[in-house]
Image (tube, rainbow, N blue to C red; front, side, top):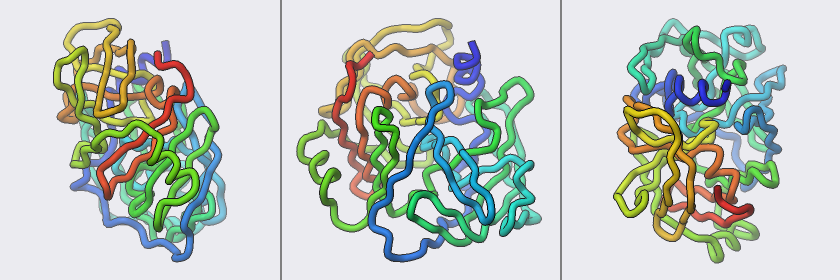
Length: 277
């Protein structure tokens, strides 16, 4: 099906710039402590409304991607966007190479947050892989300096700055927790799969949870990381070639729980909102 083809083609992070290819984080207008945005979904993948200059776009939320923002060339005419003379080359998890033009956007607004001078990379993809939203995505660097609460059930994305308070403090006090690994491959959890040590990337833009394998088909395993457990996790086998991980936690993992990610503290907290499956 389309969703399975999406994951086999992408296999975690195809077409997404390496941390070495991404410009410095954007400068943010001061004063915003917390902001909440609504999520919509396509093929189980979250989208968020983003204002860029004079235009509102619905973009994929992709925490598996390093770039702050990536846009298809059809949107290069929006006000305040300047294409630079530079390009970025990047590869996918199965070894294909891509090239995209770099650009800057004068102003990006997501929820109540306004960011200035945001660097981005053109959204390019192979002819045999067309993502469910071709406009583009927002990635991890758009949220630098903020903690993220991702809640699929409530269809909300909340970013926090300053001291933890309110629902964030409650989730920290009551949720299961685990160490967060932060490196060039992204944000990941170390844990076990049926007792065997494994490391899994967190990726909101994967329609399935994946496990590295040269075989095909799906398998069922119990995943545990710290206090966070997902029994009977269905995993699609994919020959991962890019990120140095054993698998990817995708839509099924995120749909079952509210997840708070604190990159600075390198911790994750989670509470179940539905039976894990």
